[in-house]
Image 1 (cartoon, rainbow, N blue to C red):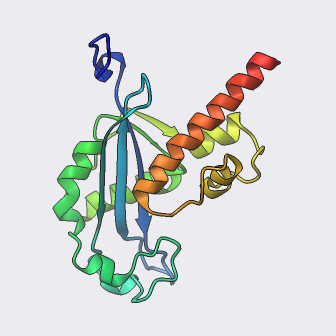
Image 2 (tube, rainbow, N blue to C red; image 1 turned 180 degrees about the vertical axis):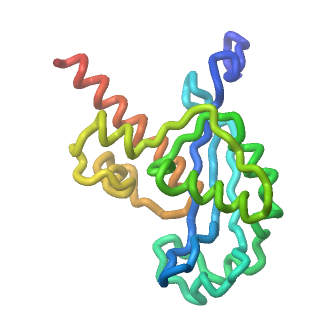
Length: 193
């Protein structure tokens, strides 16, 4: 609780960092299925995590998930076979995303599309953001190639934040830490220059 008694929402819309893990289509015509959703809601005033949510998701076609995972995220068919289907967690996902600022790494070209597809699949309107922070675009433009490529794993390694786990909740927390570190570096460079 803040000493002034003012709430986070008084300073603006909360930011929700989110990430999806999906299958990787292996043949033409095969679609992406969301296998995991993870999100943290942070206060834009101080970037404190206010809430989090994560769930594995059972795809309608279990054959898209390998029996034994060679995936970096370790998600196997056994892990998702007893998980809820997207329709069962759609309300929670909608509530955490809708009318908030969305943030994530490469979300405009990947995660946002998959969310819209998943909601369309169940015949429901998708959540709508009030703003968007795609850290891939922001960091490419503002931070440049200081760390090498702009993959989350490379950026995390550059700032010695550990290895990317490719699990949704871990990745969104890492994404926030990478942004904090990049902002600090840019701030310091600006002061020194």
